[in-house]
Amino acid sequence: MTRIGFQDVEVQNYLAGKSIDWYDKIMQTGFRNEQNVSISGRNGGLNYYWSIGRTSNEGIIVGEKFEALRSRLNLDAKVNDWLTVGMNTQFAKRNEGFIPADQNQVFSSSPWGSEFNDEGTLLRISPQDDPGPEPHLLSYDLLMMI
Image (cartoon, rainbow, N blue to C red; front, top):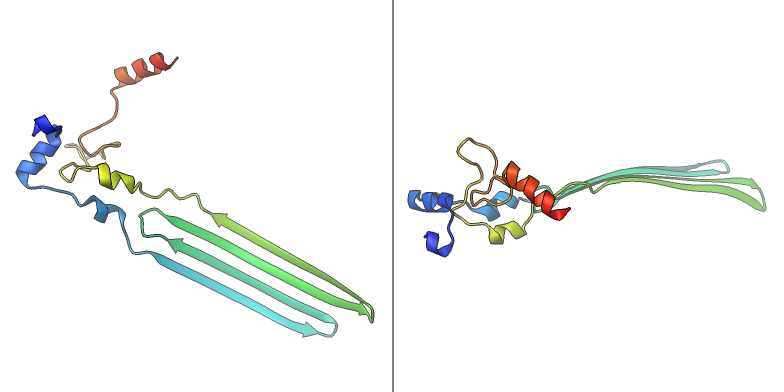
C-alpha cells in the first residue's frame, strides 16, 4: 500500500477496517429562522411605521452561517395644507464572518485517514497523519523565503 502513496496511518486504519465518511462530517441539515414585527398607524396628521426583523441562516455545510438584524422607521407629519415633512431611516447589522468547512477537502481526504493522532490531538490539514511542519523545518522554510 505504501507503493501507491498510503501513509502509515492509512495502512493501519485500512487493515483495522476503520474508515471515515468525510462527507458526513461536514454536511448538515440547513436551517433558516426569520422573525419580523411591525407597527403602523395614524394619529391626527402623523403617520408612522416601525419594523424590526432578525434573520439567522445555517447552511448545509458545517460552519456556513449568516445573521442579520434590520430595523426601519418612517414618519410623516402634515404641517399644513401644502407641506408634509417626513423621515425614513433604516438600520442593518450583518454578520457573515463565519468560516464554513472546506468541502474540497472531502474529495482529497483519504477515507482511511484519521481526524486525531494517537494522543487525541486534531490533525492540522491532512487527515493522512500530517501534524504540520516540524519547528526546525518551519524556520528553514521561513529562511528560504527571505
